[in-house]
Image (tube, rainbow, N blue to C red):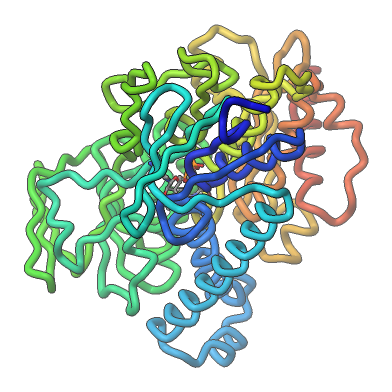
Length: 465
Ligand SMILES: Cc1cc2nc3c(=O)[nH]c(=O)nc-3n(C[C@H](O)[C@H](O)[C@H](O)COP(=O)(O)OP(=O)(O)OC[C@H]3O[C@@H](n4cnc5c(N)ncnc54)[C@H](O)[C@@H]3O)c2cc1C
């Protein structure tokens, strides 16, 4: 008999918590998952990843016929107003979220995981107090504790979020009608995604950021193509600009900057995330957060208290659902000393703007800074038959390869299905593959994946010169 109530208690039912709980259940452990919200799935399912991607798909479809030069079909088939379209899109998004939540519930129950509604905080390093939605308190203990409490949008007090037309990444997904105009504050992933989604729905967008470029850490060839697309969509890009104050009268917003004053009907504030750490009372377990609130962990997600693991957004960057899931599985493997065979491949990153971007490995700037002797090969979607058929004329794929070893060092893609295509490059890099492997592979025809062959051959041609 264990001296604890559970083998594993997981706090948070987002992608990190879910995967940790299921991995532990697969090892035959007694597992409980604690969730303070009435709905399961965390930010990923309820207010972030899935809802935003569902809305993106609707915006993308809205423009699809036009992109293929079939404007007459587009105008006949979408004989509804943009705001009616938004309502349909929100309804579809809600249906997708509900279905995904039902699947999640089924997965947890099928694996014998106990769902414990309530807010968890530490009493000591093995014991959690659970405050139930009805206000009752219970204490439960566990041999292993996994913290997966995620993060929330940063809402600085000088931004008037109490006004209906001042939005963050959660409230924008609940709009019932399209704004007349939207100023997006920030130039990161969430800002760029929503800017292109709402531009596609016909909203006049201004994006304002203090940096010189959008998505500043990405390969500059790719971000320049994105900026070009944004300008073609009519998005006004205002860079190197700092906001000094924001005023709203619930109808209009005035944004004061160190440059011009900007007037708009709505703003989306999309700068930064804050870890959900305060309620956990981690000091009772001997844990300490860093200045910004993130809890430091080892590469296996273990904290300084051996049996407590922190995964997902609570552990800081890269703050993605994709990595949170894997961290959950790895933490459980580590806790139970299971040999865990995983590729040491670099993490892929996808940005679901319209068009979407994806990359894996180094950028050209990073290689230059590190003094690496590399060659880049390029391919355009427009030169592939599939690109022409689907009307994806502006896509672009770039491979960076080491001049001496021919190893692939990075892949950068903009264009349709970039988030799917990137995994070819990622797997090759994970196995220390070379640009010759990519060039010699046979790809289905016609596909966008053929761009790998064209870009790899471009690299090899340059190497022969
Ligand atoms: C708009 C948006 C779009 C995004 N798009 C993508 C994308 O395309 N791809 C991608 O990979 N990532 C994306 N992300 C990021 C992704 O959503 C997060 O990285 C992911 O949700 C983190 O998972 P998590 O398990 O750490 O936490 P979360 O998903 O945040 O879940 C944490 C859960 O813990 C619960 N909780 C918190 N404190 C307690 C407590 N004390 N007791 C009990 N329960 C508690 C919360 O209620 C919540 O349900 C996006 C995020 C946003 C905001």
